[in-house]
Image (cartoon, rainbow, N blue to C red; front, side):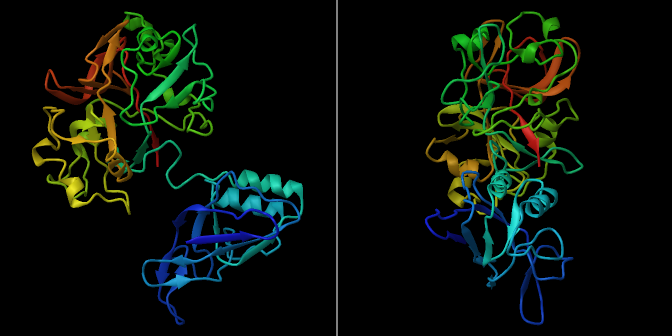
Length: 419
C-alpha cells in the first residue's frame, strides 16, 4: 500500500499502480529487498506511477510514505529514493538532477521510491519540471488491454487495443478532430470504448464521407487510410501504410506516431502464430487454448485467450467452464458456443481476453454479413488486388487467420502495440 501526505493545506498525493521491481535475497540481518539480483546496496523497492493530475506547489514540503508488503511475509519501510545509480538522491531535490535521472533511467517516466522521502518544492520551474515527469504511464499502456500475446517464435509479445479502430471523418473523406465525448482525439483517430462495439451499416460507415467510420478499405500508399468506397482494388493499391502511423487517442491524450500497428498476415504471419502456434497456460478444458467463438454482450465474435491469465485476475473454475472443450480452437466457427453477458465480461477482459466482434464488412456502399463475420486487416499484402487478414465466417464455416481479401472491402482494423 502507498500512503502520502502533504503539509499545510496541500491535497494528499494519491498514487496508483505500484509495479514491484524487486528480488528477495537472504541477508545477515534478515530478508532484504533489492531492485535486481545483481544489486548489493539496500535501495529501491518499487516503481510508482503518480497521476498526471497531481500538482505540487512551490514553497511547500511534501512527505511520501511507502509501506510495502511483498506477499512473502516481508514488510519493508524507511527506504530511500533510488535515482538509477548506487547513490540516493538527497532530501533536497533540484529540478535538473531529478528530471535527468527519472527520464534517462526510466523512459516510461515512472520513478522508484522508498518510504519517508521528504522534499521541498523551491521554485515554480521545479514545479513545471515535476509536473512533466509525473505524466505517468500505468503498468498497462493507456488504451491497451492487460493480456499479453506472443506473436512469433522469437517471443515478441504485444498488447491489443481496447477496441476496434475508428475515425471521425469530415465531408471530404478526411480525418478531422472528433466531437464530444471524444474531443481528445484531435486527429480523429481513436478506439471504440468496448471490445464488442462497432458501427455496422450506419450512413457514415457505408459512405465513408462524414461522421464516424470503422470500416476501412486496405491502406495502400494512395488510399487515404482506406477511407473511401471505390469499387476498384487499384484505388487501394500500393505499399501498405499502417494505420498506426497516425497519432491515435488513448482516451486522454494523443499517442506518438507508430505507437500502434497492425499484426502481420499470411501463413507465417502474427495472426497465424496467435491462433495456431502459441503455447498457453490457462487451465481451460483444452490444452494450449488459443481462441473460441461465441457471444459477448449479445454480440457474436471471436475471443482470443492470452498466453497466461493476468496476475491477480485469473478466471475461477466457474468462469472457465463457460468455454466447452469442443468450442476451443475450433476451425468451424459457432457463435452459439458460449455467451458472456456485458455485466460478466469485465472479469474476462481483466484476465486478458481479447474479443473481435463480427462487425461484417462493406463492398462499395453495400454492407455484408454484419453480425456474422469478422474481417480484420493485417499489414501484409498479397498483390495489387489482395491483402491478408483475419476472416471468420459462420456461414461458410471458415476461421482463417491468413485469408486473402479484395483490397476494396471495408473491414475492421484492430491494432496492437509491442510490449
